[in-house]
Every structure is written in C-alpha cells, then in structure tokens.
Amino acid sequence: MQLHDVHQGIHRHKARKRVGRGRSSGHGKTATKGHKGHSSRQGFKQSPLMEGGQMPIIRRVPKRGFNNGAFRRDYATLNVGVLEASFEAGATVDEAALRGLGLIKGRHDDGLKILGDGQLTKPLTVRAVKFSEQAAEKIRAAGGTVELVPPPRPQPQPIDSTHRPRAKPRAARRRAARTPQS
Image (cartoon, rainbow, N blue to C red; front, side, top):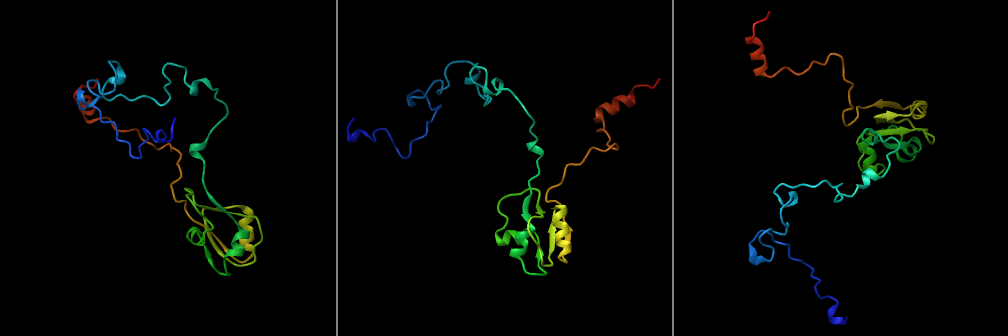
C-alpha cells in the first residue's frame, strides 16, 4: 500500500443504494433481494431476535429473577439538608423552584420526593408528591408546612367490581331480539 491508496474508496458522502431502477442500474431485476423466499416479498419484516435458524440468544440464556421495571416509580429525590442551604426562611419549595436553581435535572415521571437527611432550621412551605416520615417531621418541627400535590401522571387504578363488560355489537343484539324466547 502506498500513500495515495489510503483514501481510495472512502467517500465523505457515500451515495445511497437506489434499488428497483431497472437492470442497467446494477441493482436490477430482483432489486438486491435475491431469488424467491419470504424475504424477497413485499412487506417482509424480520424479528430482531431471528438468528437465521440458530437458536437465538434470548432463548439460549436462562431466565432468572424478577423484573418489575415497567411499574417502577421514578421520583426526583432531595434531602431537607439541601433545602436548608438553598432557600431563605418562608420560601415556597416546589419542583419548578428546584429546577430553576438546578437542583433537579432530567426527566422524573413521578414527581418530587423529599427525604430526611440533614437538618432544617428555617420554616419552609414544601410541596411534593411524597415525603419520608423523617422529612415531614423535620419540616414541621422547623415551623414549615408539608403539602402533598398529585403526581404528574395518573397512577394505575385497581379494577373495581362495578366494571361492566362491553355491550354486544348491534347486529348480535338484533339477532337476539328476532329469535323467539321460549
């Protein structure tokens, strides 16, 4: 290899492959899909787990444990010691104020939770979705107020016993009305 060969075949803006433009394009006839088979047909979608007939890794690896990740709560947590250092006496502390000071960053779908680490001597009005018992006691002992606010996204509700099944389709109701009752 020589120096003038180093960048041979490397292009900053590689032209995309234009398939299905006839035989003279170099990608003609089968448009790079090969001959026959379901992968050459229109609308073909392959599972990302498919490994060409080999046993997929998702089936080779044993499944252990329990994962409740879809239902995990994601709170922005903050200690009362941080509130002591960041706010003046009589201030109102909520998620918007904390984001304004840069104490909360990123996405937290379930709101703000105040924890009890540290000391609090100033009376503050604290609004959050959740409080630890220790945090609530420290805020009240300092002369402040604890206000619970609803979570930003609705919590899943248990299915109640008053749930009614969906009504039958109109055609089924007509048929039932036509048949004589015995």
